[in-house]
Length: 196
Image (cartoon, rainbow, N blue to C red; front, top):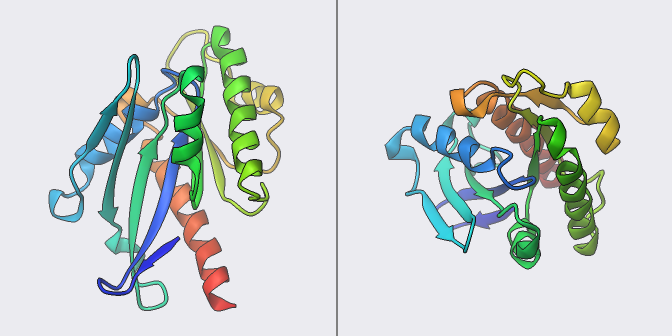
């Protein structure tokens, strides 16, 4: 959370985290395409050798004011490949909320597990208690005939008491449900912090 007093904005950072090709970029592209151009910045893509980090920000006017400040949501993706671990850690630093995008394909279960564990390791290294930061899980690619169910993903990753949303990001299904859930959870936590 960062407050820009000059512009009266409350900047909230949400990071989409997950294994390579799970749909993180697709989520951001779908959101970007549907947010009014007057309320968003340009989509920035930082290309790496085989992957890219995307980000843009937008004013979430539907939320109303928080402590007399207008919320500005900054959305980021992390590169999925393991050899970009330092970049993933850097992007995750300072996040107010995380969307973990799990890949429903059965042969990607180990990649999901490795990415989930690396996310936990990074958040712990920031001395951020896992109960402090809002996390929402999106189970993407649910349109595939052999897609793993939400319950299998929950059991495999040992996800307890976190909201899970099924998605087909390429079609926009579940993308905004996920975004609304993480935004709502982040705003609720920020309101609790600001009320102290």
